[in-house]
Length: 123
Image 1 (cartoon, rainbow, N blue to C red):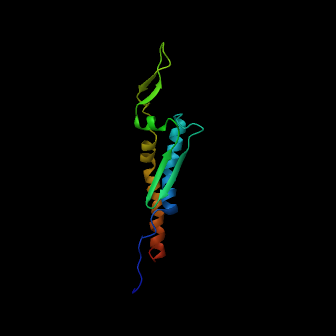
Image 2 (image 1 turned 30 degrees about the vertical axis):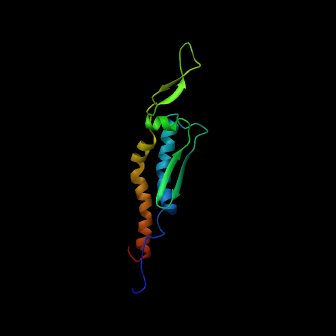
Image 3 (image 1 turned 90 degrees about the vertical axis):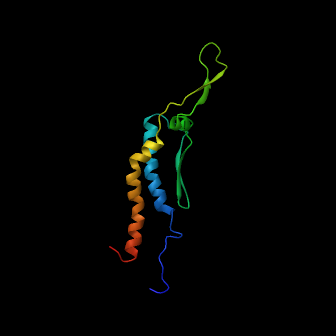
């Protein structure tokens, strides 16, 4: 086939990658809502840039719960005007949802490969 070539250049990411990431994001939303972490002001969003999909969460308690990071709170006791630092609640939801939904996300993205093969005459 002179003058004909098949490449993936320009075919990375796109709607298939976003759909695969949305599969994981749905699991994140369900876990966050079930644990009370996703407040009405919190959003879990998927963005795609090239061949990278990013799932982000702007729920106020997402970071300390996902990472068990220390964060400031008002101190309890007599002098409540002071801040103190406490460990996060250690209720991760992104990692476990990604683990649980990875197979379904990969299967969703694999549809792209199936379409490429079919377009080139493979069954």
